[in-house]
Length: 533
Image (tube, rainbow, N blue to C red; front, top):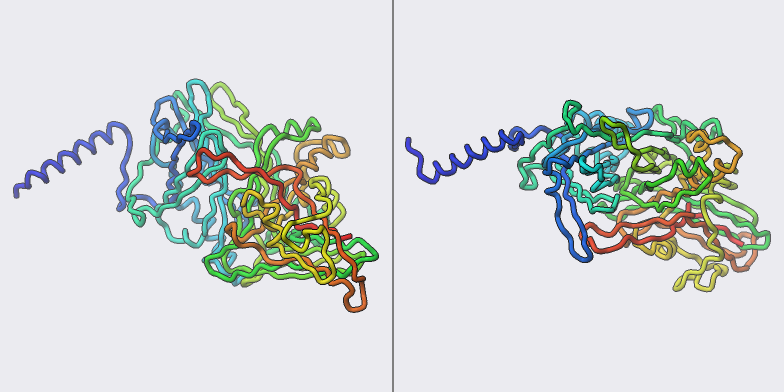
């Protein structure tokens, strides 16, 4: 049968396109042949004053390569809680591909573990750390560089399917912006696989992220009391403070305080943001100098939309108490190198502070209350990694005069925005660094007892992660109240409240579309620590 003229033209176009694609070595994958897995693509932008330019086409240049490393959080199948599922370099446009078979064991382990806990697995959130750099191999100049947390729900990946993770990068910023598309469902039914660089290529270049040390609960069991730890399914979880309260005066009122995680809307998620930094860090610490860096929150490394927690404490004069959850806090130090046949060149050091999992049974986050303060080691680290606010005075609240009178209270929702001046969603600061800092000197090969060890512990202690509701307009519940004289104890006197804030500034990258905006810097509340006088 003769084809209509228009059909012949279409057939000719398809034939020419197919030949051209074969000649250039780019393989177009149709929806019917698209292999299940993750397809990571880049969108690159330059900013000149108030103008933005899409320069994604630079990766098509012959003298430009790009590399991607992906470490997925996997505490149940990895001793150090991470599994590397991609570490390759590419040339040309297209996608860095991760086969579904590489991520499937991680997905299965999350689903199995949370089913055994009778916990909601559909709403569970975990994360993977994605690192990217784009380099001109002619002059060894790094054009783009970034690393960040990509949050995802393991349950949504239980069935094989092709997923595109598009990463937007802005030159000069290490923060990355992610967009997820299910191929086919989003109208995008094909992607090119980028050409991998092999050792046989004349421009063979790769990068190495060398782990210097990682500090986990397992490293602390011989340092902190044994009752701080629980073995859950073969992994060690530890008491992790979410509130520390001291009522130090002998002539003071009775104090009450609580932390309340109640999800009133299924669209709301609670989780823990990680904190990252990069720069000249390890050599500085070994030479007893504090690094000049800023910290930034990333996305959730753990979370969900059906997990709850409520604990309260009541303090009489000269008492202290702390509330905790059982979690897996981790701090990892790495050195980042770019290598070729001539050797390796160090680019920067990186520090990752994060919580990889929280112990949940059913819908309840496991935790409790301890009388007194956390172990002296933790408190010493906590003090060295933070600064005292002085008497807390927050305008427009019961603390606007600097004190809580008898029967006055202040809600966390009134405190968080006062410190979170960048609307970064930092809420309940968890003093992760103070917990793990004891292991930093041995991990970095610094002799204990000297100035360098003191500096290193102060730096490690400065890291705080945030237990938060997702979004800038909703906050974790709870607060502090001065009951005055209560049940025959205490006195009807005002209480002056102080807090501890981070020693280092945290910065918040602007939204991806606001290319002309500058990062915002702020100091975060550390561990929701209150000291009443």
